[in-house]
Length: 276
Image (tube, rainbow, N blue to C red; front, side):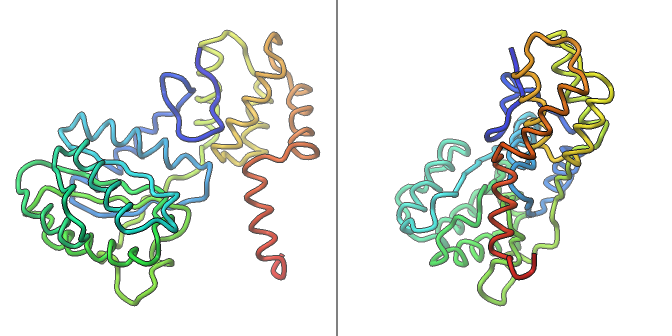
């Protein structure tokens, strides 16, 4: 039985998941135009779930997609970074650069491959060690300029910060102008997500509860799933889930719980205390 997920990207077979067709088509359109672009937004907003669904669609369209998470590479050596990069490229693209120790040479070799359509997705891009981060971006930029002649058709950089704001020199990483926004859920999408639970379990949400979940969360995916998860776990045998049930969960969130989303808000608020 599927459930509401509040930790990491969704696995559609295990979690209630929105397939955001228009948004996925926007990503496909950029890739078909051979654009290199960014996806940046706060945590728990559905970025990872989105690009995993996008990757599945791209594979169906004949692309080879390598997805790499560099969250823990802030202090990693260049050797360790290249090992991870080349391992994923070998597994997902079938191209072996494991003997290379130079980033620019790896991307030069990528450009030798004329056949095929490859996509590289870099998640948690801010986690890359600053010592070689710019070299990595410049290597990508060099590939971007000749992308119509080689296999690397698109690079997607994913993170919580605007990539243009964390580059430490004056050069653009690859003359990038595109950022794909992954917006919060609309009210209709919140209703659609809750309906998946209703259909699969028979447990219903009162209409007012659905409206209130959207209202209190503003459609933020992590919080929407959090409220629904708490409701269904606290009242597994209640049918329907009423507004009184919702109000108890709301009170718990606002007075007792330290949710990941609120932790992030508090952390930033402390850093910007003078402004707050």
